[in-house]
Amino acid sequence: MTNTPDYQQVFQEVAAHLKNVDDCGKVASYIPELSKIDPNKLGIHLTTTKQEHYAFGDYDETFSIQSIAKVFSLTLALKIVGKDMWNRVGVEPSGSPFNSLVQLEYEKGIPRNPFINAGAIVVCDILVSHLHNPKHDLLEFIRSSSGLAHINYSPKLVESEKNTGYRNYAVANFMKDFGNIHNDVETVLDLYFHLCSIEMSCKDLTQAFLFLAAGGVNPITNNTIISRERTKRINSIMLMCGFYDEAGEFAFKTGLPGKSGVGGGIVAVHPGEFCIAVWSPKLNSRGNSYMGMRLLEAITTKTKSSIF
Ligand code: DON
Image (cartoon, rainbow, N blue to C red; front, side, top):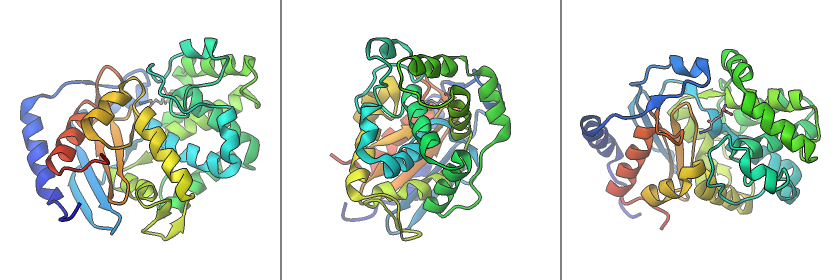
């Protein structure tokens, strides 16, 4: 990219246009606490590696980042166990819904990748094995790597996830039977439910993910979070697996690695350039933000921002 596009202008144009074109999707209701969110929220925030900020709408409001947090748990586990991780979880797109059980049976309890629920639960198991106080240490890692001390879990969401997490219990027990969960299922899922309950704003997300656009170093804090080689691997997994059975669609539309969550947030990374986060709670049938996907497609197309 030579000239920096006028992102502010682009955000306004794209949001105004899309609001008039269509407004589909449904707020996630399978976790009761998530269904309470105002469906009309809309936030966009972009931070460049040079620390320029561009914002729109509800960009500074915190929301449940849900599966977006699986990138943080993967990053921390990779720092701890390195390539041994890949004996326990794969790096292939699943082509299945995020909470699916089917592949686990014929792939003998080895999840396809660290971003489907099964893979994230194995990553939590690895963290439980290696951290002294997993919930505390994971949160501290996210706070210190992002430079955002206010980031926290939502106790109400943890409760709500726990009370409705039948599939996650099934997935974890199934993998335990195959020998791919080494700790007590309840302890591992407690960490997983906490991970999913983290709350952040679009602005927070762009700051926390900026290291993936900057070779593993957070340019705001100057902290090295992870090596350049592992940054490449995390971005690659995001590109291939960040949107479950819609990963191909997201890569096709935006040409950027990204990660979604059922809270309606999406983060996308343009290595060397910027990190962008959008939030719109209504989800499409695959559990990804309906408007978020449309916004990112339009923004990346208009500004010609793509890794390709
Ligand atoms: O495991 C669950 O059901 C959720 N707490 C996380 C789901 C999520 O965000 C998946 N993706 N988009």
